[in-house]
Image (cartoon, rainbow, N blue to C red):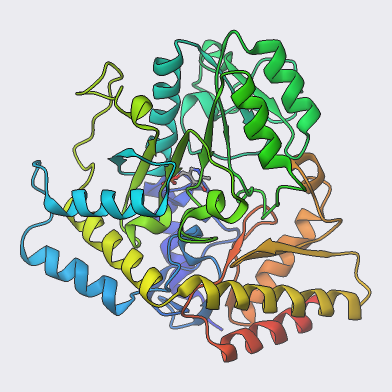
Length: 421
Ligand SMILES: *Cc1c(COP(=O)(O)O)cnc(C)c1O
C-alpha cells in the first residue's frame, strides 16, 4: 500500500495551510490520505487505495457518496446558475419539507453551516428572552464560534473559560456547563440561574465525543425543567436530524424543543445550516424582527436542490428502517467480537451511528476521557491498512450510510476482528 502522493501533498500543504488542512480533525499524523474521488460506500485516495468509508464526511453523506439522485439535482441546478442573491422557489420548498417533518418547527432561517446555525440560534434565544446566559453540555460540540468554545471540566458552578486563544473572557462568561445525563446538575444550575438564563443548548444524542445516548428519561426531564423555569430548549440536531429518523432525535425520543438547529445531512453534502422553531421566536429574526442575521450564500439554490433530493430519497425509500436495522446488526456483531475476545471494550451507538470505546461505556465527557485514546488511534491506522476508513479519533462517531452493502459490512467486521486481536 503506497501513500507516496498523499505524503508529498501533505508536505506541500503544511507550507500553505496551517497544519496542512482546512479543518483540524483532518490533520491525521503522520499524514492524512488525500482523496481523489468517492462513490457509494467507497473513498479512493490519490495513490489509488480504496477504503470502505465510515467517516462519511463526518455525517452528511447518509446516502453514500455521489448518490445519482442528488448528483442529478445539483447538475440540473448548475445549468440554471447556482447563486442569485434573490429568493428562489427551492428554498421555500425545502423549508416546507423540513417544517413538515419537524412539528416543532413552524418557521426557519437557512444559513450555510451548522456553526452559523447554533450561533444565530443562541443570539435569537437571547434576543427573544432578553437574557444572556445559556447552558451547554460539557463536551458538546456546536461549531467553532466564541460563546460555545469553552473549556470542559470547569465544573457546573464556574463560568465558562475560553478554549481557544483569541476569545475574550467576557465572550464566554455567560456560558455555563453541566455533564450529560445528570438531571440533578442540570436542574440545580437552571434553578439557580433562571433569572438570567436564556436557553439550554444540547445535542440530544452526543455525537462529537463518540455516540453517547441520553439515559432513561433524561431528555424528557430536561424538557420539563426548562419549561418550568421559562428557559428555551435548543436541540442541536446537526448530526441527529434526518439521521435517527425523518423527524430527528425529537421524533425518536418524543421530546419537543423550542428551537432546533440542523445541518450536515439536509444539504445532501452541499454547505447548509438551519435554525428553526416556534413562530413567535423565529419571527424575531430580521427583517421581521429585531435580531439581526444575514448571509450571501444562505438558502443558495445548489444546496437547496441537493437538500430536497436527499429528503425525497430518505422518505421514498424508507431509508431509516433499513439503515437503523443495519446499525443494530453492526453493533451486535461488534459486541460479540469484543466479548468473544474478552476485551474490556464497549460498543455504543444508535440508529446508524456506532463506535467501539476502548474502555467502559461512557455516559458523559469525563468518562470518554478515561478511554485508551492512543490505543484507539493505533487501531484507526491498522483499520486504514485493512481498507477501512474510520474517523481518526476515539471522540468521533462512525456513520453507516445507505450505500454500505452486506459485503462491505462483512469485510469491515473481519477487519475489526483481525485488528482488535
Ligand atoms: C458539525 C456540527 C456543528 C457544526 O456544523 P458545521 O457545518 O461544521 O459548522 C454543530 N453542531 C453539531 C452537533 C455538529 O455535529
